[in-house]
Length: 393
Image (cartoon, rainbow, N blue to C red):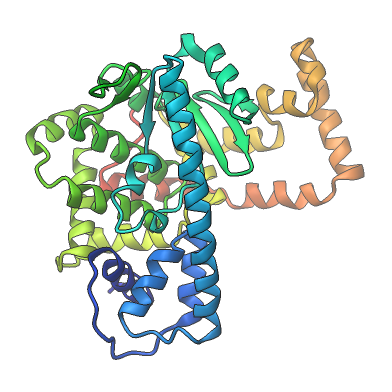
């Protein structure tokens, strides 16, 4: 049986997305609604749904929620203006670009501000990075750090991730399918450098991103809403093609289970055990998962081709002795003399003991949160819904 508060959040979200209005014969748990709206970044959705279903807009929690809705509207307007500036500048300068995820999904919601966007994701080509740097600087964006798959740019109105590839290369199984993301790109009509995916491939990418987060550390309810909104706006997707491609990704069983969850939440479907498991997991994850789930997920990846106990030990060692890349962020000298890494592990622990004692509790809590049993349970939970890490670490 799904928790009654989760059922209410689903009802509020459904009302907001589908425009359903009727009065619920129940007491609204206003504190819980505000908490979920904050944790899952669903201010506009839950405020609209709550009003539709008879909530009192004058209670303090609803007033606080309304304040966040107003801020969401202002943030949304500023973000869209900056996205237009970037896309137009890329077009004017002949920089190939393809909008991803939130940029696409915002336009599919009843109101764009109902779909908050932490950052704007745009795919670019590796051989045009220098041009991107120049244009972004001209637009007033400051370049930040570079990760495995993206270049970061910041502006007071928008955080931008220009993707070198759609999927990080360390997500080896999904990266093997998507590569740099350009293979299935199609040039938009009447443009010289703007690209898109056909609807089926676009949804497959959005769904794979959902699956990646679900198995890596967890993902929030807003992202489940994304999937329903897309499928609702594109009812004529070629399901046979999608089945074929998702089977290549080994995601089709997971897709069927998520479809059951979507049918339950938005189409009066039946609640089965896997749907209950998935929804409970999603609501406990927050918008982007939890740190403990991330550590367990990392250990599950490490267990590929090894024993779970061996993976547990490897993960504990990784927490106690961070990897080279992590250490270079704190001790830049290691970039020039990597052979000193073991010595700087000792230096790091001495500094923690003398100057960063709060980190001792953090590290020990991280280690205590891991156990062979928890790692096994995490793996079994993924397998139960049709997911796995389909590579050896």
